[in-house]
Length: 117
Image (cartoon, rainbow, N blue to C red; front, side, top):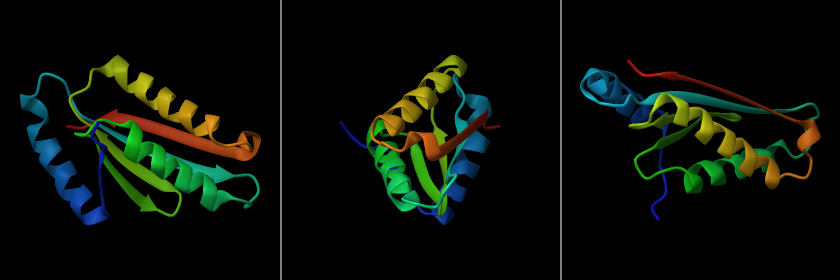
């Protein structure tokens, strides 16, 4: 099983522009998603961010794009996906994340998404 495509900001911007141009020609849209991780206390934030990075690189499809935008902020492009499936994917990411983090009470995971185009 192939992992998602992980890239830097510059490459992500180019891929986003390409998806935006193609959005009207595809049967199912692509979605842009933002994931921010924060802790009420600053302990082990680095561990939580690394855990999310691993989940995003290994649990998404090979055509999906992942970029660590800033220290605790990730952006994703989910390609060729129906509206109701995006919520399922985001819930699955969040569930995997909290399964692996024993300090989930002190973690905030903020997830937003919208169609590209």
